Length: 189
Image 1 (spheres, rainbow, N blue to C red):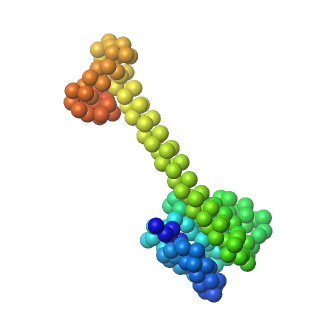
Image 2 (spheres, one colour):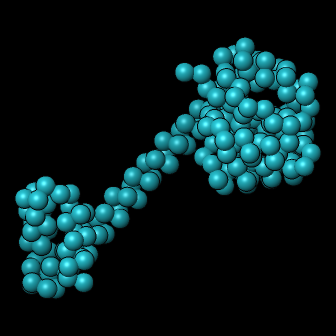
Image 3 (cartoon, rainbow, N blue to C red):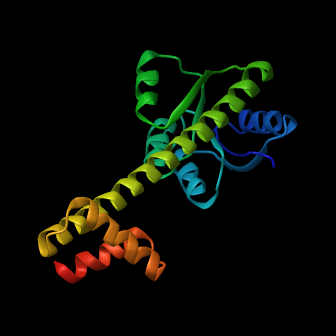
């Protein structure tokens, strides 16, 4: 499946040239914006794999737009800009920027950078999912521990026997451990 890209560039000729370069390389340019406000709007409407953003644009610049998009959406952003000053690079580090390319750029430089930025976004998403799953398991474990503590306090069970009791109810009722633990907490708290 083609990777979907949102392109934000205020110069129409550069935008058209960049879009053609991306399409020739097999990418799907699903949206184009001429300023940061439009880029934010399109980021909200479209599900994209990468945003390519110019820094200097009218109404709202690319760095501010990137920060707003980065705070709301988990989409990698590649800056394509004529500005290489250190201040821009430092500001880019604060947003969800995965790459910084200084124009003019050749297709030989640009396409590998786009592919790497998309890959970095995929890796980042994978790690984010793993962290969320680990957080969820930790929360479930906390609830089970709380229920075990209630059984220990209410009925004098040992820690091991309270867990066995929760597990036995879980198996008999065909419910997961967390659900059983929540019922114990609700009933005895």
